[in-house]
Amino acid sequence: MTDRAKLLQSFMGRVAARNAGQDEFLQAVGEVAFDVLTVEKAHAAWARARVLERLTEPDRIIGFRVVWENDDGEVEINSGWRVQTSNAIGPYKGGLRFSPGVCPSVLKFLGFEQVFKNALTGLPLGGGKGGADFDPRGRSEAEIMRFCQAFMTELARYIGPDEDVPAGDINVGPREIGYLFGAYKRLRGQFHGALTGKGEAFGGSALRVEATGYGLVYFVEAMLAEEGRELARRRVAISGKGNVAAHAAEKAICEGAKVVTLSDRSGTLVAEDGMGQDALDWVRERKQAGQDVADPPRGLGLAFREGVAPWGLVEAEIGLPCATQNEIDAKAAKSAMDAGLRVLAEGANMPLTRDAMEALREAGVGYAPGKATNAGGVAISGLEMSQNSSIRPLDPEDVDRALRRIMGEIHNRAAEEGRDGNRIDYRRGANVAAYRKVATAIAAYGVL
Image (cartoon, rainbow, N blue to C red; front, side):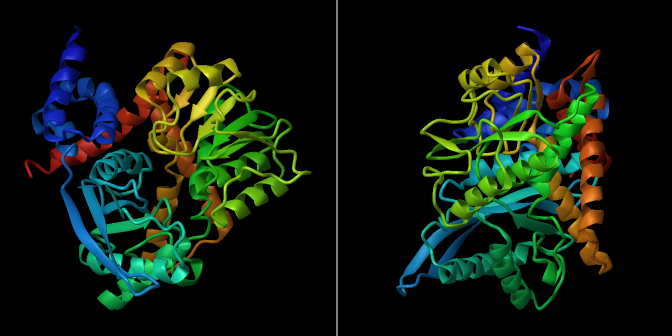
């Protein structure tokens, strides 16, 4: 066993003993530790401070009961959490998600990733994540409003513009943020930037909804530019049909690419000749109505493949997994490569298993992790915080230019750290670049 392997085994043994059964969290920590433990060991102050091990223990995990009333007048009870992972370089920042699968392990993994993602943006933002095991599917708008208000009744005491600034995430969009911010404002009696993702009418930023998907495409364009190539005319396979997937598809189409797939739990839509705006609009309508994509109308150039994911289903040079964690294993990665995959950038958080990452690396496929590629949302959230502080909103063109610039800078930081001759290891580069920034701050504070 190599010294590196021994170091990793010892470290992960300690972390696993404290976090037994939290598979998603341990997977996220292991992927970062593989790249940065040797960097930490080589720096005396960081090794002495045990920076990475500190980051595996959140500053605090806040759990609370959410009690609310449904439309039938019945009391319902859910669990809510806010994981405040690290505020070493700024206030805690990270989204809220409402989904039955939300639990401390998932939120700890997301908060841990968020620390590194936020550090890569260059903005003074710490990392955290939160949410509840509430399922909004089939709920009325009034029930969603009452749940949001009850959730914020518990959360409000722990957040604020200089303390913790949540945003939206899965099933928490502009409508939910509006309800949450309204409740916060009433409870605290203050109008300030305690949440991002707000509507533009009350302090939100232009392009916040589009930012993650647009930013993903801007990062891919920077990857291609490294090789003297462009996105135009290239075939792009995308998984998912939600906010990130839809806006990544929209931006890719605008940049001249051919988007050949979108998907949901029911299966995959295939557009051999590339999707048009009318097809994308239909997918969005289905998403908003809570319906699947299993029955595309004629005339849109879409075929539906039931029960299968996009990977390897159709020829595509670029893959953008935007659905959920661990959606691509080694078998799916091989299928995608057999269908022409040369570049993969994550739109979702941790959508690849470690075996899938290794398969891509061994085949020489350009791979970039979500902490770098899907940072566009938090980047624009940071701009929203700045706009709230200065009481000066930016127009959409200025925000879009800023987003493209920030994603280019994230790419350059990851590329600089990950460059090895003619090859760039974006995963290692992103992990190490983010770690250096956070470690510098943590070591400067002393033992706290």
